[in-house]
Length: 153
Image (cartoon, rainbow, N blue to C red):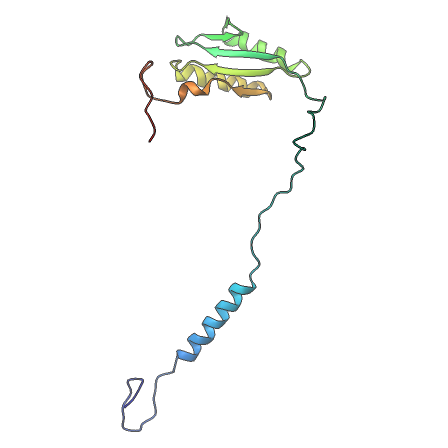
């Protein structure tokens, strides 16, 4: 009885026996997997000691609030500004050392176009101390004002 599906007539087998080739390939594959170094992605950082007092070199910055009302009016520390006045106010803050922090807080119902234009003006001005304030008002984006929040399960 022939194991490889050949004939029993005694003639030589014409197919190559691939079993030893597959065995050798599997052994080589396992050897390559074992010898590959483990990929470690580490970023070394010097973190402050949690028991250390804060350094005295912390910069105390003034803060300027930039708000957009639901009507699209831009307020600088509560004072309405037009586009030209906003540009000059931003340029005057850039001259101060240290640069005051600009806190941007659009109202939840403010027009997107107004907010996008103001952000573009801020970006072009070169302000570096910038932050968004009041983002929690957008937690339930798309909900009507006063509508109860959706409870998470």
